[in-house]
Length: 310
Image (cartoon, rainbow, N blue to C red):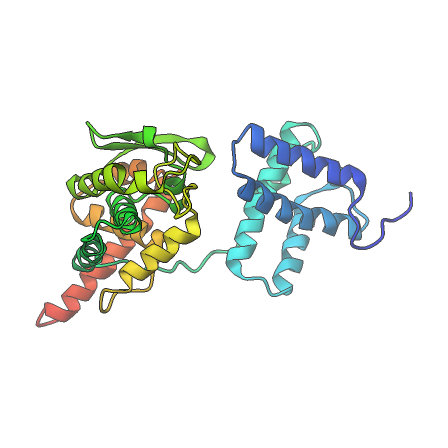
């Protein structure tokens, strides 16, 4: 059989990739963005096999390690390598279940250990100052200002992701019980409570601000853009960046920084890890445990500043 030209993916390998993509979309319910990222990483592995004259049926741990070594020598960061290993392991698991592979070589492929960096978070006083700044902007009842205040309050009150916020519809608000129904990663639904400040901001937005922007499009969306369509995540990021930027000494952050801050403040206030995991929609407790490191670092900093024998 003729060797494929370097850089070209044989049809049978491309067919396996497309079948894997269909599995990610229909069975695992992953977003198009995630499916695209996984398939891009798997394509790199399949291209490595094709360029070296190997076939998928003969894929083993030694080949996977060779591929990973080549990726490392190319200068990719550890975070990129870890993501590609995760994608390839998902692919080999699928290939084994569907009979493409006799056994799964990916289970023994170890990703490079990441250097864990602690996320930047606001101090509670800084968060309060940012929310107060957003509230002051609503004094003239401008619809955009009312929307921005409600978005920032809800992000901090719930710790939801920016994509989850933008995907909310009016019907997702349970105003009587102060709950919001969120559709998270993997199409998993959860209910997240919010407090009185967020409730007041949401009521003003829904009753006064939102009707001024509704123009017959995206009528069901909770948060709207200036032209009446569903608000774009880029707009939300700009709003949070500008709001937090009004607070002296606050770290530069977007919606994910508010999510980190909300989780940290919940734990510092006495919430247990399992509860915070449920509220944030983390698939594993290990992800939530990152925030315990943040709180420990903060306690150490306070000790260093205040204890006479620190």
